[in-house]
Amino acid sequence: MTVILPTPARTFKIGTRGSPLALAQAHETRQLLMTAFDLPIEAFEIVVIMTQGDRVQDRALKEIGGKGLFTREIEDQLLDGSIDIAVHSTKDMPVEQPDGLILDCYLPRENPCDAFVQLSGGTLKDLPQGATVGTSSLRRKAQLLHHRPDLNIVEFRGNVQTRLKKLKDGVADATFLAMAGLNRLDATDAPRTEISPEEMLPAVAQGAIGIERRLDDTNTQTLLAALHDVPTGQRLAAERAFLAALDGSCETPIAGLATLDGDTLRLRGEILRTDGSEALSDEISGPIAQGAALGEALAARLLARAGDGFFDWK
Image (cartoon, rainbow, N blue to C red; front, side, top):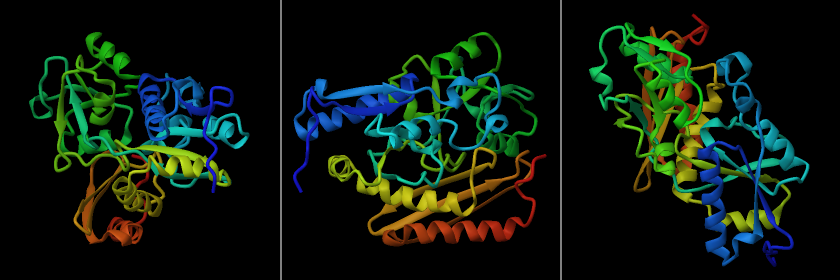
């Protein structure tokens, strides 16, 4: 098949949110395409699209909907042909794409771990009794309360700079961010301590950039094949199957991380009650090719232990 390359006269449109991190991810995608096909920057157009999650900043995510808050408007423009691809933080992506779209290209995964951010440069273990921690993540809130029920958790949304300002204004003593985002933004002004997966298992697909396209766009499929990172795709196949089997959304505290060792995939998973009062974790290993099946099997194990009502709000 002959590949039709973008040109300055017929640009390749990359859809993205407008946050600094989202733009950095779109720029990374553009650069990889430029390098892979020896194309000029003028052959691409970055299209910024406002999503519901961006518009509503004064309410918790669970109050305005589940996963899809940061993707729906972008996917609408992808479906109607206004853009050629959509660049996402995969952890924000629903496990099922709208009819006509597919998520089958992943860039090499960045550090998937969480970062503890405190202006004094302290660590999570150093937090005094009753300290206030800001986070908009139900997973992080539940994990934190599971280990430290004494802490006060407040809603904390916004980009890196917004959250740092909130810390300076005394809204909270500390917060969490993703190591991947801090690395991609080269945010050296954010004092952080990396939290190991043993201490806090990260969100499913954290640190991975996913590129969505129209299912019938075979030309774009060929272009993206040059960017796809196979190991990242293998890890996310297991993690997202785990999430799908749990019916995961922004309203359920779920964590998961897959790692590769030779031909073996290891998947760790955790589910928590919304108030952090109980956490169930387990892990499974097997051939990489069986990643999706391993994710489903691990989810089934945890659901069997959890019983009815485990994810009910408390």
